[in-house]
Length: 326
Ligand SMILES: [Mn+2]
Image (cartoon, rainbow, N blue to C red; front, side, top):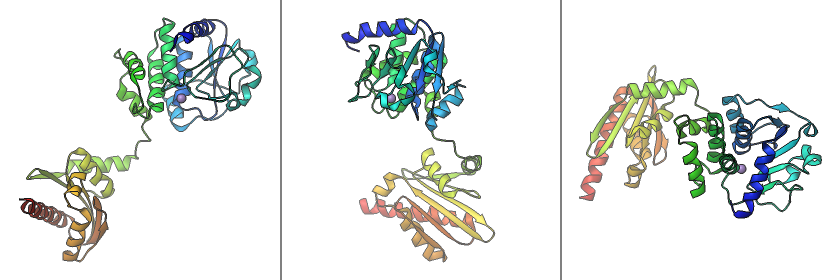
């Protein structure tokens, strides 16, 4: 914040400290807007969060996780102070237009429209509105609650694309918010992660890992396993676990399916999943297809035997590559 902001922030803090406040969420509010609202509600007295439209998907998740209470379609005229957050212009909040004259506005967008209130703190250099609110809470000499910290971090993480666009100021705020032992970054990240896969897929991942075998061939790790479904998904997960190549097979009566994955490193060296499986398919009268890094094969036969053939075929290819480069 620059010097001109210091007096303004003092005035805003003073205003937040008196009377009744309505914090307004703009339509389709994201975790940055909601995070600010939650934090203000947590640290200042007599604050209601007002909602006129639905929230974004990730904001909804944050609201459910923290069990946030909203007033639906509240009358802004019934409150001493209206607070508008993370909103670029008055036209974004039509329900509030008649009540903006003494409203508090905290925002980080660049906008051609201005706000008709002296309590307007806009800092387009701030990576998130939550970062601004976190600084305001510190300036007010207040201690954010655990819920406030989680909410603010959720907003910061969202608006910086998981801290990719965070600057030094962001990291200072993040460092402050994570200083205690109550909030860890991993909690914030997992809260914002996309929906968890369904239980049957996760069970397949775990079963695949439980039954997995691996060998070291030279400097490469080759993993294989048998499951009943989600072969491709499990094959991908085995690379995440550390394999350079993975083969995952399923058996359905006389028929088998195999999914193969090659790491980026192997693909760069010319070892392709599609080549391996199509060559093998020719030998065992099966069908195969796919891409350099990911391929599939299906046919009639024993899944375990096919897996062994996949692994020995890859070993041959790696040996051939080794003798080529020697
Ligand atoms: Mn924002």
